[in-house]
Length: 401
Image 1 (tube, one colour):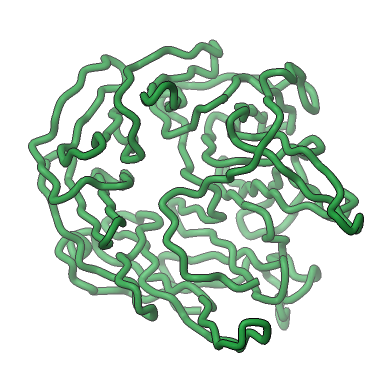
Image 2 (cartoon, rainbow, N blue to C red; image 1 turned 180 degrees about the vertical axis):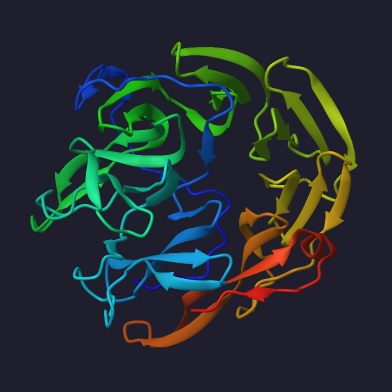
């Protein structure tokens, strides 16, 4: 399974589905839904990657099918290794601890000394590969299925964890046979997705909120921050798991340029170039003293920086320091490809960012097309000091394998 060179603004599944709001049922018992303020962590998109205090977990496709490997980047040694402790292991089959199905969206996170993996991988009989939530030791040992998704259900997009709980966006897929009757196909869309709460201590779960037309965009002080598209407007709200109550915050013109950080929702309205900050608790709105050179398509928040990305016509990335409201043009681009695409910040470690600095490229001849086609054989990771990142200096500390 080859990766093509594609710029993804957001990972979104555009499939039709039955609405969770009509289910009103519980799965595997009832979760103990509770939360303590300032302890929830938001993970954006199901990218199969997660950085924590000591290192970074990522999936690596083996290009030979629907399986790949869990990899670990150790920040101190600056090495990427297979999450496997077996000597002489070839890491190519299920005798390897790191060998996992990767054909479906994957999500990773670390909580209370355990590694968790949300997997959408499945098999036709639903037995040999089960979609659900897996838990293991940090080194990959003692892996087991903690919670199995009900038939037809799928992890959708963002999720939040903390206080021994997982809160994830899920949807229900409708199954039907393919034209040859040889397998099952699934269809659905995210207009009727739901919020699933899973107790990480015992795997008990329940659906706690209808997420019709809503998305998880962040977390703050024990609350999930949601956005909802309605009538050409974007409505923000906060959901408190402990009381299971949702409180409106504000509504603005519909925009994709939104991010959450340090108690604020940052956004840029369509056709404008001014960054605006919305206080999550007070609802107070203030404009930052920053005028961007263009209207960004997408925002992300990293360690006090608001990353503003623009893709239409040209690719550009600006970094705005939220405290000083200083703007930086980031002139660092991916190596190994012809397209001029900025490096991607994946995690932070003290004064450093972990970035994808480039790609290893290979090519193959495609018989049916009669052409030789390039594909991404692997990602190149590197650490860079935050000050060098802002200055556009490629002073990389390369991650080796």
